[in-house]
Length: 219
Image (cartoon, rainbow, N blue to C red; front, top):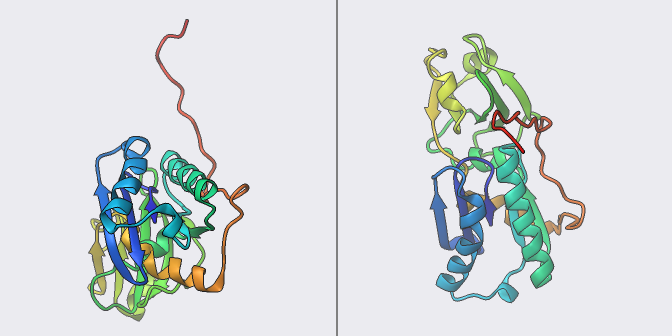
């Protein structure tokens, strides 16, 4: 399992619901250099070969354009190389499954620009209740949910909402999505044989990538 949708790069291997080995690095811009070595390390630690795997799972977005590209391209190469099926896992559901505590609703948030986040609403067990959308946060955001019960705002985008949300039903958990939290959705997809087309699978970016204009001189 590979998770590269944010600054954090993580990889994990499981046997059923049990994590056998994992690696996590929260240093920015390390995905391209660290992901492949992490995969080799966790397989070796777990005493497995690529041929022993049933499938390869990767975070499918939304998230960082560059991070998602690194993860998906690495996962595709791994699948082509060892002949294994590919599973794409919703990044926001990964976050929802990392919730600590009991809540009526969970809102998973990934940081976007300024006061904007990519978000989706889940029930207390991590089942999706809304589509993913770009939300510009203010003091009125998610008031209906907060009036109806307890709500956990989770993810790297949750920290943006904390200063403007003063409702007593709101709780916050700032964390990055982790590969180890992909176990449940990855196993569900494996059991249902819900695999991606390795050749054509692309991450879900939500918004088109906009490249910055370099200010450096070019010959």
